[in-house]
Amino acid sequence: MSEQSHFIRDIIIADRQSTKNGGRVHTRFPPEPNGYLHVGHAKSINLNFGLAKEFGGKCNLRFDDTNPSKEETEYVDSIIEDVRWLGGEWDGIYYASDYFQQLYDWAVQLIKSGKAYVCDLTPDQVRENRGTLGEPGINSPYRDRSVEENLELFARMKAGEFPDGSRTLRAKIDMASKNLNLRDPIMYRILHAEHHRTGKQWCIYPMYDYAHGQSDSIEGITHSICTLEFEDHRPLYDWFVEQLGIHHPRQIEFDRLDLTYTMMSKRKLLKLVQDTYVNGWDDPRMPTISGMRRRGYTPESLRNFANGLGVSKTAGITELALLEYHVREDLNKRALRVMGVLRPLKLVLDNYPDEQVEYMEAVNNPEDASAGTRKIPFSKVLYIEQDDFREDPPKQFFRLSPGREVRLRYGYFVTCTSVVKNERGEVMEVHCSFDPASRGGNSPNGRKVKATIHWVSAAHAMDAEVRIYETLFTKEDPNDVSPESTAGQDFTANLNPKSLEVISAKVEPSLTGASPGSRYQLERMGYFCIDKDSSADKLVLNRTVTLKDALAKIENKAGGKK
Ligand code: ATP
Ligand code: MG
Image (cartoon, rainbow, N blue to C red; front, side):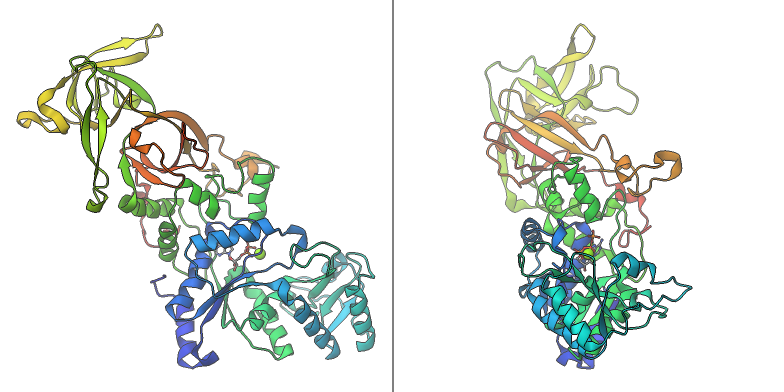
């Protein structure tokens, strides 16, 4: 999968050479099922599954489901679907919740060895006593409880005798450590909540820092790859596995993907869904894998994008244009070309026989000869794009205007002879004459035209609702609510009011019956994908991306970082 060399690959190669873990490579992708996966996760998926594949190893899909109040089966199902769609081949599907008993037993072991204690402070008090970077924390008054008392209290916590938040189990490390994560971190909290898999079996739940490394260890993970914010947690990760004397995976941190104009926090994406700023997790404007799939992105384009990102130890922002470049590249190779008019203007060929219909041969994909050709109906009354006609053309406008000749793609050369206007002076119809000698759009006797425009036959065209998307946010950094602009507001103040435009278009009849998910290039207009809202008599198309390549602006194509 990934081809560029990077420091994580180098670590793996060195570990294999020193026959660490018997040369095995076993990674995992560990989402918390508290929302849908987004394009940032695609980077992690690509890395974890890609490295396992490259080194003949394995990658587990593991649900980090230790927080019952936010997790749901719907999210588990969507994550499985998305990872599969992206091409991740897992060795098995695992759940941290399957390890609850083992994690509990290990916690008891740590209590017995004097490395953990039950603390009666509330989680808020624990936080207050933690100190700061400059100041050490304060030892809990419960830190020196006897092993017996700790064992008894922990058992009673598990038995449900205490209310939420009244006690925790904490690791006994060092309240003066320079690393705040080592100041007696909480291992277990009391939470009387129903878990989506274990139901009411547990009312104490392990914290991420305690559950994660031990889950890795149980699964025999060799390289536990996570994002940079966990760098300071690594000493704690190492501490637990060392104290327990169990298999010790190696945690390696890399830079998370951050994209311009894109929100990458599941919590905030959930807010967009819940407060109906968007139409669900798979709204094509969402940066979720399901939203991007619905919009027409291919798994290959996301993989190529992720591969091109590289992996590093410093955070940066990637241009959205880089993602769009990759989807264009991929769709250019695979999307069938069709003609569709987004903003129709009627064009009448005055010298074309009234009832005549011709079937013009059109190439399905100039990038792929095996895609063949199709026949498109041509007749007296057509639709062209409003933007392809100007009654009073500016200097650089070479498309249709009174007296000018253009090529109708695969059709004929036509010359505009007159226009029909409504009472407001708007052009309602364009009248043309056609040259029979130019059939198929071929130039008669070497005559040149400066423009070729697309069209559909009015009598044969299908109606289509086309959804045109712009970025969901108006700011490169959607979280920027700096004082001048949106003081006191949250990120939703940066939502783009024009992120969705719905228009009524006309498309060629070959799209009849096209199934949801099919991707096309509407010639000259962009790449589009059939939406699941389509019905037998009405097509709905999502614009995936325009044809224009904004990437030219970006100096470094491969990195794309600012
Ligand atoms: P969020 O804060 O949006 O909930 P998260 O990091 O908590 O994101 P998880 O479900 O815990 O999301 O993430 C699963 C895996 O994906 C983790 O290993 C995490 O590091 C990785 N990941 C999450 N977001 C990104 C990102 N933007 N870029 C790269 N990897 C990411
Ligand atoms: Mg998380």
